Length: 494
Image (cartoon, rainbow, N blue to C red; front, top):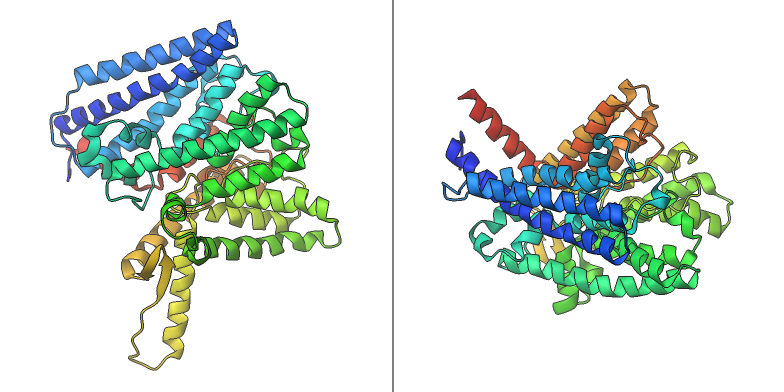
């Protein structure tokens, strides 16, 4: 472990970072190809500049900073933290060059929102953005949802010895297979299979409602990336409301839920026990929290018709709970919701989906363990003194509620709550209403993307930076960032 990093440690970290940035330059070739196919001349040069700068920086880091020490977990955590910042900054270059952003800060905000699968936007005149730039916006969510480092792990065999550090650093708790490289490849395999199914379904729906075949195929890809990776970007300012399609809303719900569930659960359903879906601790926690919050959300809407409830309630809550951020509300923001309904959506965003999924938030596993811990304490109060018992839960196998699990759940829970509140206080300090400030802070930190209207190109630059940092911290679940900050402070104190 690095207690006080040396120049050799920093050289090793920057070498690893260079490899990741080279990977980013290859990802940018996808929208570059789209620009060629769609004859988009100006966007072609935007991505040519982006991929060239990224590739050049990656090569410079590889050449100037060789690996000088055996790679440790702290190296990988440090690289993960820097990697996400670097990807968002470099990924912002072609977005800024598009002319759809008022400043580079706005483009950086959009890129971080994409990579962190958040979905909050600052883009201007979105409805007229090019195919290639929209492809890049949505591709960032696909890359970020599966994991920036996972994208590299799946092809870099030399990373096997340190893969677990990268894997955990990106906010993932569980390995699916004994080998982390195998886990990374399984996640990408699952994603591409769902990609085929999702694109086919979306294409048929979009073509049926009147979009041309070209628009249908592109938007089918974009909507899949946004739904399955719980990102929430769409090619239109009105989000899903633009399409006025009940069938599209149902299709997006299906892929939002698939993306919010643990990849480990997907593995068991595919290869082991399909009944696990009914027995799994996270699934049961999701059902309990979702329907409890749905009841809370519906209370102010008693007497409304079913269609209105679905459009104004169910869809927003499932979007919030899965961390996707799609909305089918005509105005695009939730400012018209009653306070009780807003609280239900806020709580859903706070919780999020499963561990080892594409979504953010505190996560179902931790919420479930916290509930279990409360029940354990109640049992201890009412049971005879000295009684000993063990509380279990079923997550793929029967597991014990250990002190280690309880400690980890409460630490992450507290860190998220502190960040939620801190972001809200900053927005309040800029004069925004309290409930809207809390809503927007939770949406940014939990990587959701729903908005009450605060997120706008006209909001203060300092608040944009705060939300960028919240999206970054929430996606990595703090651990890698804490290690990086601690290492830097130690380095500069020497």
